[in-house]
Length: 247
Image (cartoon, rainbow, N blue to C red; front, side, top):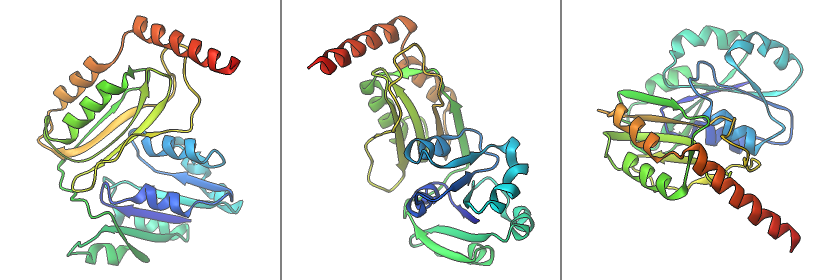
């Protein structure tokens, strides 16, 4: 079992992705308010197994079965309190630290292995999280909302990530770290959802300073589509896909 810790946006989940093979693998991120990373990994690696917080007691039996397990520790968790639990699991501890970080002694004391991750600046005193499951947005509105969010319209954002359901039935992942080159949205390997509001997880997680949480929530809500509009576009997409299948 490998426990991975580090600052928000340093690249913990991406590092875990790079280690994954076709062997049986387990992923667990305790005390996570919304499972954005888990949903992304599940779409990319269908063979993986995942534990929820209420299944934590099953962790020992999974490890006994011989699976490779990755425990991703959020920055909000107290590593000193978790350390005794990790010791009982014979866990290899990996700390991912930002490139150029000057003070790493705390991480060195905790970790068995140090890895240099993203050099993005992580300076945040608040976290805003929203579960947006069932909400649908059109791509143009999402682009505008994401640009405003990450460029300071609602406070200084150091880190943002989210999964969004688009009007064409696709699900996309957005990722932003201050100081790094902006990235395009990645389409998740999930089937199109073309029957009403999607009943699969979507959500947003934002780290920053002086965040206007009410404005963020209201702006996103304003971008989302009504049932009638969602139905209209879903019918159009189904007709297009049906015509393409006949060609």
